[in-house]
Structures are given as C-alpha cells and as structure tokens.
Amino acid sequence: MQRYIRAFLSLDSLAKPANVGAAWIGAVVAPWFDSLSTSGKFWAWILLFAIVMSDWISGTASAKRNESYRSDYGNAAVLRTVLLLFIPFIGWLLDKVSMTVFEINQPGVAYYALTGALIYHNWVSMTANCARAGWERWIPNKVLNYVGSEIKAKAERALKMKNLL
Image (cartoon, rainbow, N blue to C red):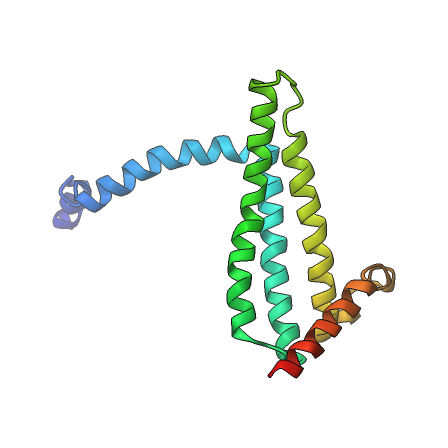
C-alpha cells in the first residue's frame, strides 16, 4: 500500500513533457475559451455551426434516400461550408473597421446581420432536407409550407443531378 501512496504523491508521474505541454495548452486555451463563451457572438457562431452541421447530415440523408448522392457535389460543399463559417469573421472585421476607421460605434451590427442571415438560410435548407429525407412527420405543417419552395428547388436539383449520372 505504501508503494502506491508514494507513486501517487510522486511528481515523477506528473512531470512528463506531455503533461507539461497539456497543462500549458490548458492554461492558455481555457481562459481564452472562457472569455469567448461569455460573448453573444460566440454563441451565435456556435448556433450557425450546429445548423450547418445539421444541414449536412440531413442533406446527406436526403440525397441517399433520393439516390442523388454524388461525392463530387459533396466535396465541393466542403469549401462552401468553410466559407459559410468564415463569413461571420468578415462581419466582425466590418464592425471593427466601422468603429476604428469611421468611428461608428454600433458593435456587432454587421456580424449579427451576416450570421443571422446565414443561420436563417441554413435553417431553411436543413428543414427542406429533413422533409426530403423522410422525416417530415416531425416537422409542423406550417413549417413545411413555409419552406415549400426550398423543398421543390432541392427536388428539381436532385432530378437534374440524377440525369447527369
């Protein structure tokens, strides 16, 4: 028992380079993450990220169900998704430029406008994909009617993609 207590209290097991590196990263990243998570901008971006990922999942399920899945289309969507997730940063920069260059103090206007528009657009796409994937019974009819034009556009695009095969 004494051997286990000595091993537990020994700094030899803690003073490994990997542990020191992990502690340093934690000491730098944790405060940064903590300051980010208190910002509404961070949570708006997380919401956008969650909806974009849900759009990907439902879009893949829809394409496989409708037999219009094409890997080249999906590969091109990777760049589109990176750009989508980068656009809020551009809004943040616009806000910074408006404050520092033009002395217009309306922090977050461009950021939230761009992020909100992207959230809405991807929510519509995700909802239409869910309906096309066969999950429409969990979506209220009013919502299905609201995104009806997107469902129709996705169905037409899927038919065009099938004809290209």
